[in-house]
Every structure is written in structure tokens, then in C-alpha cells.
Image 1 (cartoon, rainbow, N blue to C red):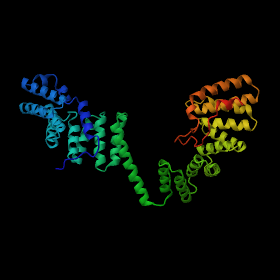
Image 2 (image 1 turned 90 degrees about the vertical axis):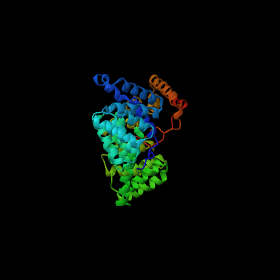
Image 3 (image 1 turned 60 degrees about the vertical axis):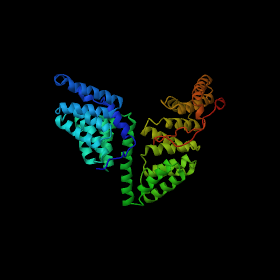
Amino acid sequence: MKCRKSAISSVGVLLAMVAADCQLCGPLCHAQGTQRAALPPAVTAALSAGNRSMAAGDFKAAVAQYKLATQAQPQFAEAHFNLGLALEQDGEYPQATGELEKARTLKPSLRGANLFLGIAEYKLDELPQAEQALEREVKLSPADAKAWMWLGVVQTDMGQSEKAVVALDKAAALDPKDADILYHRGRAHLLVSKASYESMFALEPDSYRVHEVLAQAALDAQQPAEAIAEYKLAIARAPRLPGLHEELGDQYWATGQTAEAEAAYAEEVALDPYSVTGTYKLGCLRETLGDAQGAKPLLEKAIAFDPSLSEAFYYLGRAQIDLGEVEAGIANLQKAGAAPGDVALNTLAFYQLSRAYRRLHRTEEADAALARFQALRAETDQMETQRLAKRTDKNHLPMQEAMPSTADAGR
């Protein structure tokens, strides 16, 4: 039998963690009452001594004590469980599986026995048996995140990534802050994604989907030129597919190629007149390029589609002011200035408000907007050269707008 050298870096650590969670011999707690009271004093003394040795990390001594208990009380499931756990901690996996199997046979409802049996069988590379044991454990303890995790780990190593994802998602839902669970869950999801992409590449090696995936991979590698090239290849193969032109436009805008970005967004909106984000981005870009007349109807349409687009109010307000509709522009800038959770947008909105009020000779309101701008600007000094909305959220823009200085606001 081949002893499994851990295929994951955290197996030893996790075993100790799970054991600690069970207090190393926790099932003895369930033996309290009449069953525990009926134990001979010698058995109780051996169990207590074994517990102390386990807590001290002296697993060989613990094995010796628990053997005395099982010999004196062979039908006591908890003693066999503790002996199996001590053997497992000492690296004696074949013997551990025998004791843990004995414990679960004597007491099928004994929680933890199947878990540690599954871990020991995993260590011995007996993966189908390990999976069966862990499936029994999650039925007994459906709220045990570690049991679900180990089931997912075993299924991953069996090449059953899709099954593993289900188990590991349940583990993460039960314990979302466990780093080991998150690691194994991420690994399983990556394997599923890899298999899916490999199948796609094999079926259609030159399809638009392949080029779209390659574009996204180029973006992850911070290679925007390569991403643009792949998006163009994807569009060549699916020229009327909604979404591709918008993604290409994002990359053009992010790299300062605004004319190309405008053309890509315009193509997206022509293909899909109900594209909220395509309409919104085209309107924002046109206002940035000084085309207020072309920007205004697009931004009004985007807001009608989705009133939560706070930046659309900002750019609509700017466009209206550029077109002489100053009061309407002020109303929309005020909405942008009150948008929750976006200090950079608020700061820019109050900067534009101070200028708009001054244009109308409303000095008191201009001074109040300027003061608000200056207070917000003090919070965002470090954002002077950062993007206004560099987010992966598709509803946000890839553009860059410099934060105005307090000196500019007084002009």
C-alpha cells in the first residue's frame, strides 16, 4: 500500500487543526453519564492518561494508554476512536484506519470517526474509500466545514473537480474566513475552469470565444495591446455579437485611444440600442471629448435605463452646463455630489458646482461648494494621478480624469 505524501501543503496542519477542534478525544464527552460511570477505574485512568499524552504531543505514549483501554473495554467505540486518532497523529495510518473503522462500526453515529478515517485513507492513497468515509461524515455532521473541505480535497485529487466544487462551496459557506478552505475551493474552481477552456479550445480553436478568453488573459497579464488584438480577432469572427465592441472600447479608452474607443462604443450601441453600459460609456466619452451635444441624449438615456449610474449624472451635468443649461446641470451635479461611497466623484462634482454657481454669480453657494470641494480634496490627495473609476465593475468607466487642485477651484 502506497503511503500518500500529501498532495496539498496543508494536510499536516489541517489534521492538527481538526484534531484540536475535537479536543483530541472529544467523543469521550459523549460517554459521560451511565456509560462513562460504568467504565472500570483502570479504563478511565488509561483514557485520562492518553488524553494528557495527546495534549502534550506524545502520541506513542497516548497509543499505549488507549490500547490498554480498548483491551479492557473492547466494545467501547470512543476508546477505539481515540486510539485511531493517536495512531493517525503518529503517522501509523494503516493501524489508524483499522481502529477508526472499528469505532464507527461499534457506534455508527459517532461524529468524527468517518472524518479521521477519510483523512487516514487519503494519506494512504485509498481515495475511493476516503470519499465514502467523508460522505458518511457530512451526512452525520452537515454543518462541519472541515468535513466538507476534506471531501472536496479528496474529490479534487480523484479528478472529480466539479463534485469537489460543490463540497468546497458548502465548506466556504459554513466557514467563509478559513484560509485553507478558500485555497482548496479556489484550486477546484480553477481546475474546472481550465478543463472547460481546454474543451472549448479543442472544439473550436479559432472561435470568438477563444480570442475573448485570450484577451482577458492578456489583461490579467497587463498586456493591453495584446488584449486589443485578441478582441479585434473575436469581433472579426462574431461582428454582431453584443458586448465585444464595448470590451474593445474599454481597452482603447484605458490606453488613451479615445477616437477608437468612441467608434467601438458607437458600434456597440448600434448593435444593441438597449445596452446600458455601452450607451453610458459613449455618452461619458463624448462629453470628455467636448461633444456635449452628442453626449447629452446618450447620458439621459443611460440614466433612464439605470438611475444608479452616479457618474452619468456628473457627465450629464457637465454637458448641460456646456450647452448653457446651467440650472439643469447644477441639479445633476448635486446628485453626483451626494452619491454614496465615491469620494472621488463627490470631489469632482463639487468642483464643477463651485464653477457653475460662480458662472451664475451665486457667490454664497459657490463658496459653500468650494469649501466642500476643499474638504473632500484633502481626503483624496493621494488620488491626484489615480483613475476616477478604475474598477472591474462593467458599470464603471475606464477613463482617467485628473483631480483638480484647490487653486483651480478658485478660477
